Image (tube, rainbow over the protein chains, first blue to last red):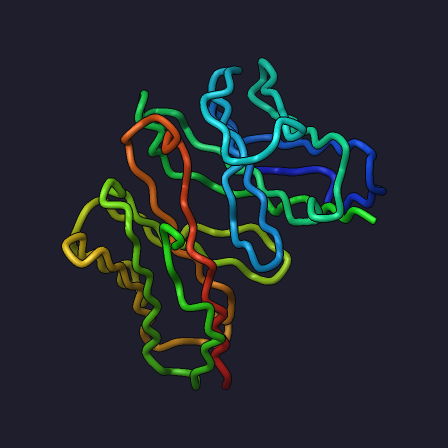
Length: 117
Length: 115
């Protein structure tokens, strides 16, 4: 069974541009999570989508946004890129079986490394 | 103060050693505890998942949770060079609100097992 896939593997942008990152969850999973792993800051929660709806977002500015498509894949958009947005962006998926608790096991993809010049 | 504290190491041990990795936390609402392993330039891989206090064993790995002390541990027995990676603890609660669906991670401990 295929795991979580992310594209592209690497992305290089300049300050002020927009970046779009994509994620395909494990087959049968309905929840998708996005995390940022910046050097020295560890993994920080960005967004959670379930059944096409945004369920929660972390402490990030509104220029970080995303969506989930009917096939449960997801897109993360980062507008007006800043140098400090350079990081590994990780997507995770879960089965969404825990109901409102949101405590399902999360399985991670390999990440997209975003470099902002 | 961070919600989850983890000694970043680095930790270097000889092959065959017992490795102990630890995290402390401040949020008493955390009920679900995980350990992930992350190889260089890869995504985190789930190793252990435990609920509330107690021990869980899986092969060479043992996870312990002590909620009264807000302390979790991962033990690796008979460590191998292939265990060399960054180990991340993660926690979550079902308290809802801003905790909804969110894993809170420690900084990660870099482990090197040398032959």
